[in-house]
Every structure is written in C-alpha cells, then in structure tokens.
Amino acid sequence: MATASPILAIVFDLDGTLTAPGHIDFAAMRREIQCPPEVDILSHKKFLEGRSKTAAASAREAVAAQELRALDTLKPSPGLHDTLKGLQNRDIPMA
Image (cartoon, rainbow, N blue to C red; front, side, top):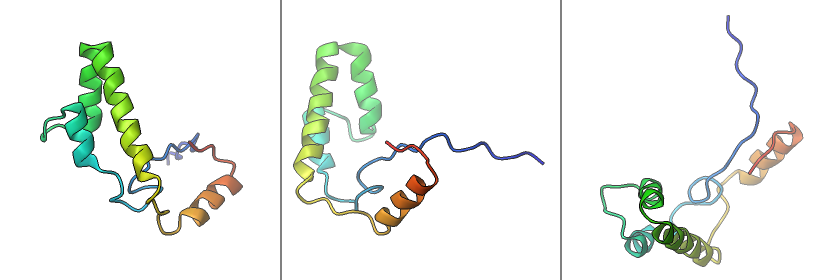
C-alpha cells in the first residue's frame, strides 16, 4: 500500500478560498487587462508575459489594484480561523 506524500506547504488563493467570494470585481479586471471572455485571467496574464514585458507589467498592476480595492469589503471564509490555526498547529507552512 502506497503512503501519501507529506504536505510540504499550502498556498492559498484569495477570493473564495481565504475570503467569501464576490468582492473582487473580475469584470473590471478583465476589461483593464483586455482579457477575452473565453480565457481565464491567469492564462491571459501568462500570454501577455510572452508577448510584452510592458503589457505583462501593466496587467499585474491592474490585477493587484482590483484586489487592493476589494480589501475594504472582504470577509473571511467561514471556518477560516480554525483552518489556519489547525495548519499552524501542524507546522504546515502557508502562503
């Protein structure tokens, strides 16, 4: 019987993971970085990185700006505190 690999670290997403979903204006983010509706934002950012350093930097700034604007309205996901405390108690690195 194979044993499971130990968890080395956990990296969290923000909207819908650490926080209740719906506070980041993804429509505005898409408009600002000119992301086509059929393409996810992260894929579009990666596409821009391969095309133009300037466009990629501008997209990173636009995404960060939208996330910062949402900070005033973000609410933690239910059970977040207990989850983070449990991971901390098991000495699992988090980011």
